Structures are given as C-alpha cells and as structure tokens.
Amino acid sequence: MDNPVTFGITFLPKTNKVKNGTAPLYARITVNGERIELSLQRRITIDLWDERKGKLRGSSAESVQVNKSIDRVYNQLYESFRQLQEENRVLTAIAVKARYLGTDNTSKCISELFDYHTQNMGTILKPGTMKNYRTTEKYIFEFLRRNKNRDDIYLKQINYGFIVDFEYFLRNYKSKSHRPAPSNNGVMKHLERLKKLLNLAQKLEWVSKDPFSKFSLKFIKVERDFLNEEELQRLSRFESHRMALNQTRDIFLFACYTGLSWIDVKNLCKDNIVQGIDGNKWIHVAREKTSQPVKIPLLSKALKMVEEYKVKMQHTDLLLPVYSNQKTNKYLKEIAIKLNIRKKLTFHVARHTFATTITLSNGVPIETVSKLLGHTKVSTTQIYARVVERKVGADMEKLKRILK
Image (cartoon, rainbow, N blue to C red; front, top):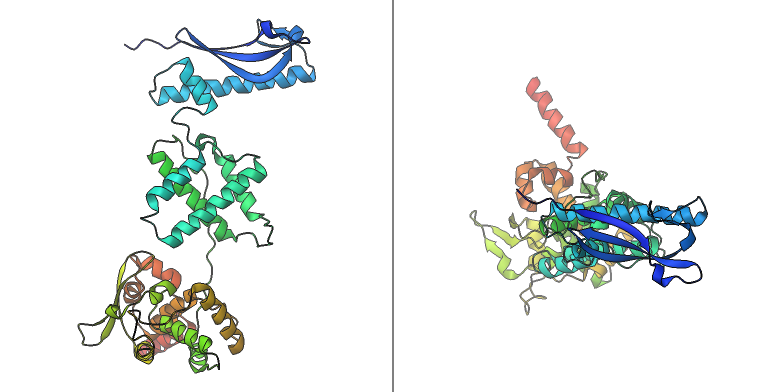
C-alpha cells in the first residue's frame, strides 16, 4: 500500500523584513515535510495580520484585496498539486511550486505549440494550409497583446472562456489597414485550426483537458457561385486587345472544362496528358491540395486550348501559361466587369461551374463528378455541385413521358 502524501499551504509575512509597518507576504508549500516558500510579490500591513487564520483582519480595502489574493493563490497551488497527482509525477514542494509558476517541463506555451507544429507539419501540410495556420497564429498573438496584455500564454490556461473571448475578438476585429473582420465561416476556420492544435497538444501530453469539449463550431452554408450556360458562352466569346485578359480567359475556361484548381492548372506538365483506355487524351495528375490522384478526360474545348498554346509553351515542360494567383484574380475581375457578370470570378467559381453547368446539368452522375473533382467522399461533391433548374425541369419532363 502506497504511503499517503502530506500536503499543506500556509501564508505568512516575513517579520524580519518589516519596513514602515509593512512586510512581504509569502506562501509556504509543504509536501511530506519538505518546505519551500513562494513570494506573493506584495507587502501587507503587519499589524493587520491574523496568524491563526493566515489572513488579514478587518474589512478594509487592503484586507479584502489581500484575502482574495490569498484564496486565489491557495486554490491555484492546490490545483497544481492535484495535477501532479493525476499525472503520477514525483510529488515534491519544488514540483508544486514549479507547476504553479509554469516553469516545469510540462507547462508549455502556445508559442511552443506553434513552433512544434511548424517544424513537424511544415513538410506534411501544403504551403497554402501552413499559410492559413500562420494567419491564425497572427490573430492569436494579436488577441493576447490587445486583450490580455501579454505576449504568450500557457496551454493549461486556455479554457472555454479563452475560446469565447477569442471568437468575440475575431468577429469584432479592427485592423490598422481597415481590413474587414473575418466572416462567420472565417472565424470558425481560425477556431477549427486552434482546436486541431490543442488536439495535437493533448496527444503530446502537453495538456490534459480539451477546452473545446463544450464549444461547437457553427459554420453557415454558403451558396457557391458558378457560371450558367449563357454566362459561359459570353465568356467564351469575350475578346480583348490585351493579351493578358485573353490568356486569363482561356485558362479560366480550361478550369471550367476540367474542374482543376488554379495551382493544379499552373503545375500541369506535358507529361500529365496521356492517352486513355478509350484512345482519347486524358489528364492524369495528383491534386496539389490533397495529393489525391485524378483522371480527367479532356473535353474538346479544353483540348483546343492546349493545342492553341503549344507553340508558346514549346520551350517549357509546363502545359499552359498561367499568371500568378494575384494577377489572375485581378484580370478575372476586369473581365467580369466588361461582361457585366455580377459574380466574383475565381478558380473556385470555375471548379463549381464544372461540377454544375458542365457535368451534373448534362446528366453526369454525381459519383463520376466526385472522382473527376478528386473528392474522397460524394458528400464533399454535394457541397460544390447543385443541380440547376433547367436540369430539374428536363428530368421532370422525362418523368411525365414515362408516366403517360
């Protein structure tokens, strides 16, 4: 049978350091007869000290404030002792004091968690994903400086209240550059990344509790833009005296007819075009975001663009001339204004157009569309793809003929 551990906390002023009627206040931690003292970093009026109660007498402002501080320190020291017990640590007065001060090896800060994540996940996660984590990191440290008046925080100090306060900070964020606060889903994404980081901390045994256990992430379903058939035709007929706009139009249309993202189109090499089992040309590529392999039959309009740029790309292994993401979005914005298309043209819109207008609306089964988009689950495709009204009407006409 294990010997019981004796643990005690007493508070006392240092009477040998009395000055002007005040003395520094200490907490004495005792574990199995071993003692160590902890300074509370404050002085008290020595004449008000009640040695029997270990508190100040009376109801003066000093007495109330000091006694509250004593109660708080007592609870925190006891919690430090309890944590060490639960973790089966060696119980000593020094260990309790170190845990309280956050200087023991198990008391990690959120900065250390971000550093660990960057060093160990930087080669596993995609650059875009790591960039998002860095943005979340930036918001967290700005929150700590603005709202908590500190540069770091121990992981064990992150609780439900911290999460709620951080959420409120994000929703009401005001930047010096007048950048708008994140949307609801943007806020949820930052909290989701924080949750994943704290799950990692649990696996590393840096924390014992999950502060997100009672917090629910609430995403709002957003209607995703796509080009309908008429808008797609307008875009196809668009011509400009500027080569940059024409080239961006072609690359965007290529994405509309293949479902590839901007980075996947940019990285396409000539070796990615292969002859399929049906004798036609296919794209064989692994998606940059997920490394999921996809095989896409090249539709005639997409193949036409590849042929048109063969001469321009003859001295490079790349398949198509793709501008940077920033320039591409800038040119797409100009094209949308010129065509009076009141949608923000992005490669996400092109991908959604492939899922709806090009494939689902023309009777391609959602399971096939899911494979073409490189999704591992059909449920993911259902977020991207909506069956437009024309397809619903056509299906109902078929049903009417069958019923007749």
